[in-house]
Image 1 (cartoon, rainbow, N blue to C red):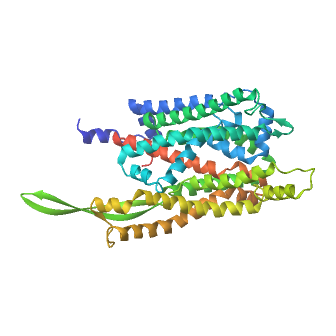
Image 2 (cartoon, rainbow, N blue to C red; image 1 turned 90 degrees about the vertical axis):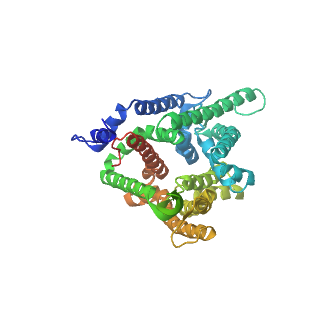
Length: 455
């Protein structure tokens, strides 16, 4: 059977929906079936890790801490739900994400790193190795910070006691920190195994799995609002609209036409042959990174200030700390205004930094490509930068709108704090990871001449 007839034979000629048929086709291919089952197996192992707690944890006090401290809920998102159990994987992959962001920012600034980034696959491998090295001290420091916060009393009972490097606490504290740091390293290793042998980006899928595992709890919180059925339905509709907008802006791109000129020899003569292509500039090229920056910077000062508030004292310091904690708290309108502004600022910063690192104009010139009507070299760079700034406005406004959506949903539905169950960051991560994984599975199917998910 020739390739043409084989291709036609694998088309969806049944009455089954294209998505269902694509899933059946995926499991029919042995190596693709292995990739899917391998990914699911790694995620199951991760969920077991997320339920192995470190010694000395008071579970009731830990639950109280999550209700009173928004920073813990934010960190729990990137631990894949492991922090809620204070498990050995409580740090999740957040130290690795922090290390990656730091390396991305330092790469265009430090000449050695910049040369490595332009040195092909070997250079990127070295930068990735440095990222792993930097992850270890970040994980150790972050673990110490988490234990210090949790040692404070929540409801009069500390979440974990005996933390410190004085007296007989040093060995137990060091062992807990080493276990948490090792947990992060194992999760990153598992994520990279998924990236290499499975389907999708492994680190992102670990975060995705943690968010999905919390859905039953969110549904339970929604059932508690059954006496406000109309508001709850309105909240669900708002959530579906946000998911739709996330899909639209995640896939949206501005295509810059590019032409390539090349010379070929034929019959002893040189002929000029041209080809056409395009550069896809994404509207939301920054992804979820601006939301991480903004929420991290705003939640941390409020959390620190809350520890200096003394209700029994009328001192100036206590009143300043209380004012700061209230202003930067999620219940404050000022907090969400700052979130909106900071997300927009970080979107421009991150998108333009990453765009400059790609050196698109130089790479085009080296490969004989050019944008029609634009001179190669610096004029092309200036043109692309101008287009990037324009489309980033749309991406920045979109991300800022998504970031403040829980607050706006609370005002629209009159559910107040209950609307916070619709986490904008969680939705953005879930939709982004799901689209990326489907896209990779789609490419695997198309390589084998099957119809994909997105046809």
